[in-house]
Image (cartoon, rainbow, N blue to C red; front, side, top):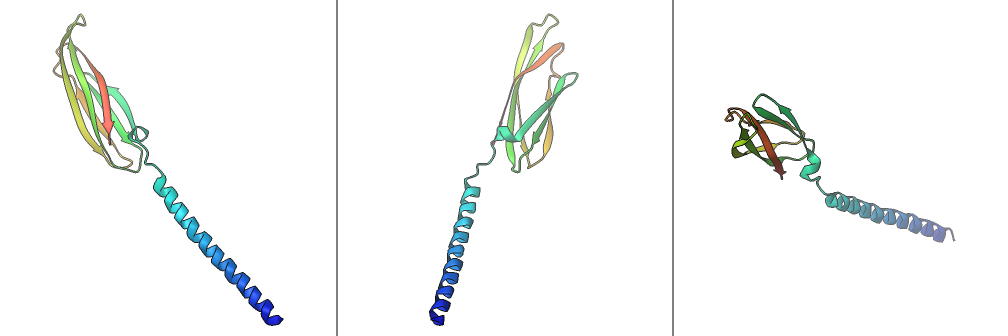
Length: 128
């Protein structure tokens, strides 16, 4: 009788250890799968911009707040005007920049070619 109780106790302990081993392996696989399924934040979530208007330019402070490298393009239009506000010329511009994780950079959008009034409009950005 003692032998069967001991055998039963060993079987229960071994079964519990085996069961916990299976559960642990399942948990590890589940955690790995959950991390694999987590989407990287998109570029809109990562980027922030602040503009500093100067004499004939705008300095754009671009910051990447994510843990991934981004490659970006900023496009814009420079419009020159006369003293009455009438457009005298318009030129498209663009700047390419890369940002490492948790880094920032400055881009200068210049309107130096304008003799009188100016505006920088149609600013758009795209990052990957």
